[in-house]
Amino acid sequence: MTVAAHTPTSKNSEAVGEAARRRTFAVISHPDAGKSTLTEALALHAAAITSAGAVHGKGDRKGVTSDWMEMEQARGISITSAALRIDYDGHVLNLLDTPGHADFSEDTYRVLAAVDAAIMLLDSAKGLEPQTLKLFDVARNQGIPVITFVNKWDRPGREPLELLDEIEQRIGLRPTPLNWPVGIAGDFRGLVDRNGGGYVKLHRTPGGATKAREERLTDEQAARLEGPAWEQAVEELELMTEIGADYDPESFLAGKSSPVMFGAALPNFGVAQLLRTLVDIAPAPTPRADNQGRPRPVEAPFSGLVFKMQANMDKAHRDRMAFVRICSGRFDRGMVLTHAATGKPFATKYTQAVFGSERHTIDTAFAGDVIALVNAQSLRVGDTLYDGPKVEFPPIPSFAPEHFAVARAIDVSRYKQFRRGIDQLDSEGVVQVLVSDVRGDQAPVLAAVGPLQFDVVKHRMEHEFNAPIELAHLDYGTARRTDPDSAPALHGLSGAEVLTRRSDNELLVLVHNKWRLKVIQRDHPDLTLDVLLAGG
Ligand code: GDP
Image 1 (cartoon, rainbow, N blue to C red):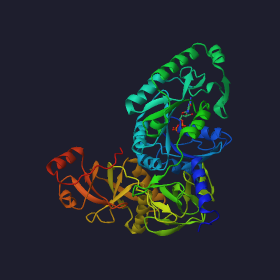
Image 2: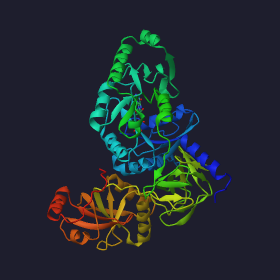
Image 3: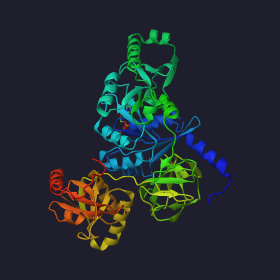
Image 4: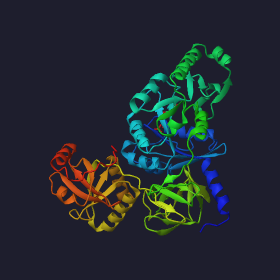
């Protein structure tokens, strides 16, 4: 149990103070925009690691099936990039990793349910790419404030004004630049701080393995040194001021405007400014609403949300780890928490903090932090853990699956392993598992947002659970939520089938395609066909 070392009041003020110095965020980007490079650069600048490359080292990365699985194989070590803690200037920055591939956007959704802000990372030559758009939609759905970082300014790219215009036109987010580049993309000279911080001239360091040298210059010095590039930047800055594109905290926090920064992660240009910005303007953890809609203050007793489950990270012990975002209170290792879904106690003796590829035991943590609970067999993604009086956070909504397949054990004598594996992958949220009396337990339907999720299931069923499976793809392309009153009628229709989603007992009706769905809706307006969260 918690050691009552503090009086209630000092404990409260400690929890408030610790939460206030935390920033918990994720980077959303299209693959190759530079997320890993930026992560390393942020950590480097915060002096959390000594040279770039120590965190991710993607040199030998082969594919996209599952980053951690591949990396684990390639490097023969246990690695997780679930969360990275960066200590910086009296603050604690928790950077939560998001999977790169579109097929895993449901995982990203869960991560975004656990952060307080996001960095939208753009490649200066490409602007808004498909995956950025999709992930931005998710961030908007969750009401997360977004800071935009335009990366790779050291390479030829687009005009800054054109990029801002694209952000405004395509996603309706009002861009408010915090800094402004001097020199076009590809001939990057330095950054003007729009908040009166003057001009920072950037000097390249070979290889980008150490901090870029930054030199502060007066406007006069900058004008002399940069000539026409400076004049152009000054003109553009005047335009920004004229159109009122100034940083506005209120609309930023409401997800209506986005502070924009230019830079280049690889040579570490503008990364220090981004760190500073995170600390200065990204929100600290705020009260999270429980399933009754009541905001739970950060100083309330411990509460946390499971946003990610990961199995088998340590080959030595077959293990399941739950990543928990702390929403309130103080965590002390050894506390016995309550699992809201079952009311059962959960011991936290072996809790770990995750730091890049290292894991170490953690003793205390506060709102905004991520802790990794080992032996978390009983937990599911979306679950709440708490101390004291009961609290439960609303479930993290599931995406509408668009790919469906029946799973069967190739070797029927391995049904027990098959069952265990499917259960586990279900609770980790790797795929959604749908069942019905008609199909029976031996042949559950797996539902996915992207087909790569099926590859992960096949791989893990064979290698982790020793129960190779075959998948028979079903000719359904869309799903809606229904209810027990409508289910029998829907089940009788051709091109439709009703199943129960095991994780939340929702009734889902699978339909061949959107056209068939429209016909059903037209002919049976009385039947319940609710839209699920859009994913694909
Ligand atoms: P991720 O897929 O988003 O994690 O992208 P990576 O961090 O792996 O970067 C993709 C490629 O872009 C790599 O070859 C990086 O070296 C390169 N890159 C990332 N940031 C920059 C940058 O600021 N400038 C330049 N020139 N290249 C960059």
